[in-house]
Amino acid sequence: MNSTLNPPRVNIGTPWVFYVTLGAVGSLLFARMLFSSKHKVNLPIVLADEYWSASKRAAMFVTSARKILWKGYREYPDKPWAYNNPETGLTVVIPPKFVDALKSHPALSFKEFIDEDMLSHYTFFGAPPDSVINTIKGGLTPSLPEYVPVLHRLLQDNLFRYFGQHDDWESFKPYTSVLQLVGILGARAWHGEEACRNPEWVRASLAYMQNVFSCIQYLKTYPTFLRGLVFRFSKQRKAILNSFAEAKAMIAESIQKKQEKGGGFLSQPGSMFDLLSTGKHEAMATDADAQTLYQLIFVAVGTITTFGTICQNLLDLADHPEYIEILREEILEAERDEDGYLTKVALTGMKKMDSFMKECARLHGPTMSTFQRVATNNMELPDGTFIPKGTALEAPVCCVHGDDSIHENAEQFDGLRFYRTRLLPGSEHKNQYITPSLSSLNFGYGRHACPGRFLGDCIVKLVLSEVLLNYDIKLPEGRPRAKNVEVGIIVFTDPMSEIMLKSKDSVSATMKI
Image (cartoon, rainbow, N blue to C red; front, side, top):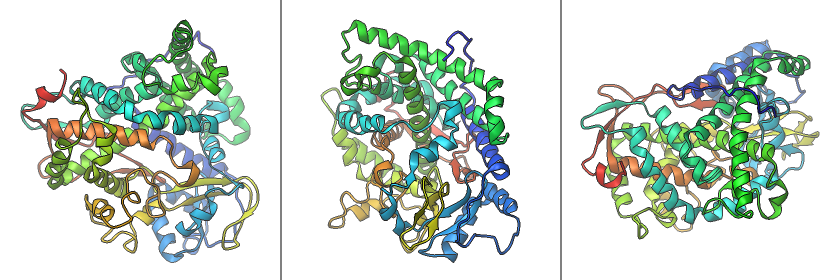
């Protein structure tokens, strides 16, 4: 990586993440519609009877994905079918009952799907190797009991800075503030104590993410055979190198400090940087390129998902204020350590909040499809359907979550839906927010289920707890909940969405101003 280029300056006071990502997604969809290869799949294709042109059907998917997925789900219940997706070509949609049989299929790859989608051979951005994923699962996740009080303290140190003091009801746009707050909390887990308190690290890591999505947007407007040449001379390449170099310089400082400390952890509990530079990862301890790349991937994947989840929950709290006191009571009764910070046990015990979050995710999840895979070889589905190499597969999560036969009164928001279900014998752990199941697929399924969901769960609960204890929340007078923005299968929180906040009398007691 070229570390001599001047780093870009990003105005993080505007919702640039949304607009860059939105543009990237739109461009990806359009480019795939023009240049993607076609795979011969002997399955019914939704809308094929109504529109002869595959490109027309693919173009419709950009703005009508939810309708198209529901049409296929209703017309071909419990059977595989296909639709024209401008991002992945002719895409096969499998019924949920196939997921168990396919979750470990050797001919299906999640990593190849992500790497191709993110153009990783140009952007260096893609799914990390299994060894890194296993370190999240086996290193970071078990340390969450130590992390929760640390994150709670960090949250209290920063919440007022981003949410402010509101002596009376005032309009508040949570998008950018939540993004910054989650960026700080995530930096503690990914990079360490010093990084999470360094605004330059938070800014630089977000700049890299912006530049990567901008590059993808640009390259996808060109056919595959031209992308290497275009990338080499593009300003997007320079921007990626610049922001990577800026982040790498800070990672190099962390590597040096770690060496001066004899290789010991820089933070307690250890961050992913610590974990990926000791033990079986010791050979990578001084590899600044690898350490930087993994850090930036963690930021992009972890921060974006978690901050979007918090924004959606805040909108649902404002839209359904009848749950606010119920959740506050649960928070106030939760266990705290000797310093007054919430514990991992306390967060796990917040079953009503957990239910509220799961219901929010059911209706406002970040994607309409999940269990995305690409066939790396010819294969067959459980019903014998032939799937050629290179075909993309997915499961229609929005339809599963909106199916009345699975979720009673599925169109209605019921914040205690899963709380009641967990009270049933044998259901204590089956309906948790973090638990993937065939009826709850937001986190994927099988061994590729999101490994960072346990950390994300803690961060979301901590932020919601502090917000509820320090603010009253409602929607602006006479206005409904802000609608989500949907592009293809991706669901965004509207960056201009508003709620009303009013500081509670207890604000000075629970925040460190």
